Image 1 (cartoon, each protein chain N blue to C red):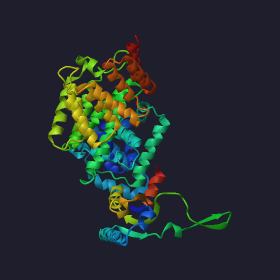
Image 2 (image 1 turned 180 degrees about the horizontal axis):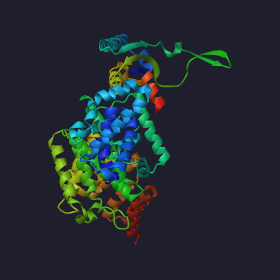
Image 3 (image 1 turned 135 degrees about the horizontal axis):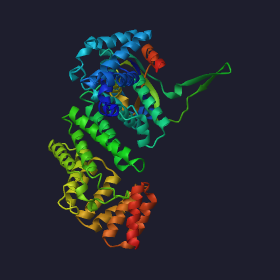
Image 4 (image 1 turned 90 degrees about the horizontal axis):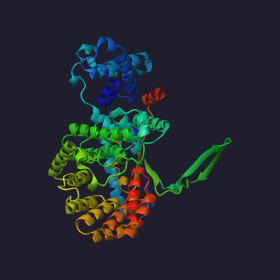
Length: 408
Length: 124
């Protein structure tokens, strides 16, 4: 029995059920750990039960009732749990999933409650819903283990003390609350996709975890098209994971990537999700971004995606979420689709406004357009400027390589 | 659970309002109070006089010291409160969002200790 795999795949469901039954994060986690320990003792000899998840949940729940029985302060609570779990005596009947409905949605909304700081939402979601260990989370986010543990302890304390409910928000609150959940999932994905340093394997795992969370959301909230769009967006980005970084760890431009390394099944699924989200009418920010990614992925030739349409989509994004970063992307699309000069003028204008002072992608984008225009000296200057600002090693190597090409 | 909803707003806003605007706001507050009272959630509440009427008391070395103030340079001042009964934080947040001053100022939502919660936290 691969306990690690079981934990990764099932702990979110088991923990959410237990929290629902016990009404206590810490107690649920502790009892689940004890149930694992019992399983490790019993299963090798007695064999793995037909439904390991139901077995572990039943065992953890019984342990919790024993624990509360010993602890006289919690008489009322114990009675309450016993009432809610009237099927305790039917332990032999644990082969069915119906006994334990999927409570993960409640857990996700609790972990992503806006009363918690965003970084705690991210860590808590990974730990409880995804079953990632505190140590792995701390390594993935380059935060000392003690700091990460403290962050999780504080978040759980706040859930308890502030009265953060363990439930799916009301119809009225759902759109805003779902937005917060989707942001957490996208932050997890981006930490894996864009992270500046750290263990490549862990980063890869974060992307996979975010996609898995996206699938859970789509499954549990089938009518929420922004959840579909986000899953589509992540699949489309992730489909290029093996092509965007070369053997030496250098970044490879989209147009120069080896398309045989793209994961086409993921592109097809991502495109399908994006189209279905768009068809639903009100396209949100994730649907628009996913559409841009889909246009890149599905272009007939690498150098010729439909830049005009991409520029138009950036216009839509800008209308709803004004941001200088999106303006940089739009300027690049204009440069590629309409004219290099026009795109450059937009980038120059952005530089004059100075809102993106420390952001290396602006000089990097200017350098790229200047290079295409054949203005090598200015392009080299812009690359140097970008290099001075970039902190990501992979990107720094890429910029250095482009600069070296111009200088030779 | 009981929550204290602390209403912060700029006193200057209030003093700059026309009598009609003040009347409309009081009416709105009255409606909100009625609403949460009818729902059985209202425990207490009130409006505070301006911060210029405040005094601060400290006992240091056994000696009581009273000063004018507080004079904290904040944009928003505590101007009133509601003590409410709510199922959970989301319920309290929903109420806070209906307080008229939430649109101009801000509402701090603070849970009160209750006996069971204290036992829980002692355990953790």
